[in-house]
Length: 273
Image (cartoon, rainbow, N blue to C red):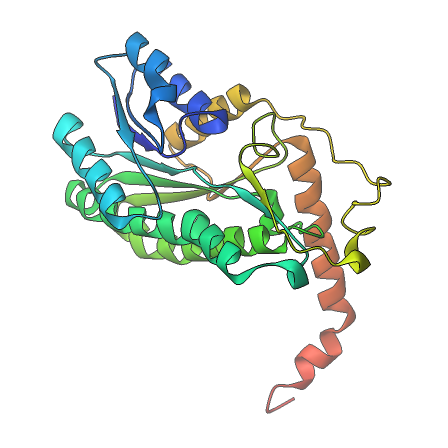
């Protein structure tokens, strides 16, 4: 039995993961800004679930949630940084204050939470950090640049941290979901109030573009994440969804082809070339 600390657990993937982990016999600290949405889950699992209020943009809030987890269960074995939201804007349309708030929730908040749980994990010589990213971190789309940038920042940090903590017995896993049937396009989405008409067509604001189907099932995603975390040799990167897998292969192939196309210039910059 292990203790999971899951952010953004009031709905969507976070809630499905909390329910799956509880079903598997583990203990869960489920966090949200409004924990009343977790009342039914708590009532069904009073001994193994702690619902804790958490605002990722408030350092005192996240530290209090971590302290509450240690007080109730004694440790945190798995941290899942799941909470976040999207932001749609062409780069030119993005408001500085909106982008700062996006990064505060999607990047800087998870970083502070990681720093808060690492001392305990280091002390016990074991622990797993799961950072929920997005296929958008590599398969970028028009209008999603700021969200992609926040997730790419989280992935860059994850890669370096993995090399820092694996010698200490800890593990780091990045999850890149595709499009799932959650509130991500509704309640969990934000849009710039600036509109530059030149981008209307490419951003699909003319009515000629359609959003891709939300094919992913969050309950199945939760099962996959649990299996990956409990695997004796877990992956460093877990892609979720056939759309995400297609995006991964397409983006890596395009990058490789472009790099090879200009490899002569690449090699020409060495001093002894």
